[in-house]
Length: 292
Ligand code: PRP
Ligand code: ZN
Image (cartoon, rainbow, N blue to C red; front, top):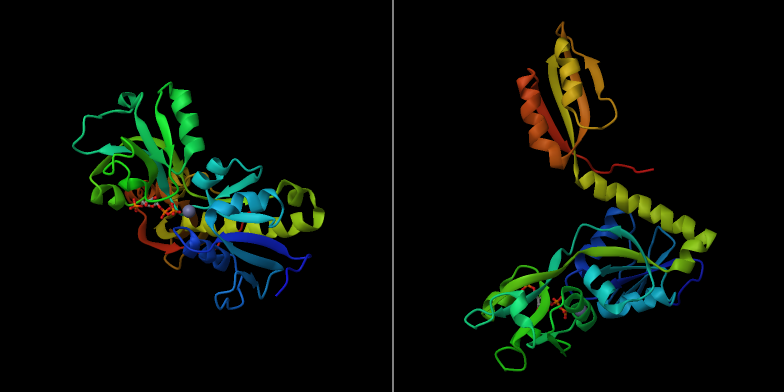
């Protein structure tokens, strides 16, 4: 299969921490892919989109050079590669931290102890910049993988590597002492693609779908019954959404109130609603919340 030059192109990680969720986010945006059969280039069935599967480290440069219009990549890789791309949306998955860690039973205790010490990492650019900014004069030892073994081989005194579950550090008797960067998956674009009207339309369509899914994930739809006179109070409790839907019930003096509530306020809101006399509170997940 060849690239279709009218199609939008996106690069995704082929294997690794973001691979599965990146496909999932396209799916949640209603984009179905033809079966890949291990191919590195796959076309979408129902959206003008070609998907390229790459090593995550290559994605920033492919997007910068316009090989693909879009990419999904970890903020850690994006910052390390220093490619010129436009950062569009945080995607709410692939959360991890780039941390400095030291041997559990060694003499190093804090970040400030690292002056003059060797720090092994596959993120030399981010680390150098961080050390400089903080005025700690550590020596950066660049290694492309298995960084966690460097201290026990006496190749380094500390490491700077991604931590997700923390199990890699634990297994190697290392403890984190400093968070250098908080990372998650981001959607990035080639700046020229954003200026191309045909591409821009497609990018906006895709982004609307993705963001509608992300917003829905953080929102609950709440239905309740309440005495009519409680309506004023209920409206004050409901956080910043548009006005709720209010329907009279068969029972005189009673109403049903329906509204969307952001998950972050959720329990707070429910507990306050109960005090107003709201009953039969029903909470349902929201499938999509269409952003405009
Ligand atoms: C990172 C890092 C550790 C591991 C940490 O590698 O280098 O090996 O993940 O995760 P944990 O805290 O859950 O144990 P990654 O899987 O990103 O591979 P890569 O660096 O080769 O892309
Ligand atoms: Zn990688």
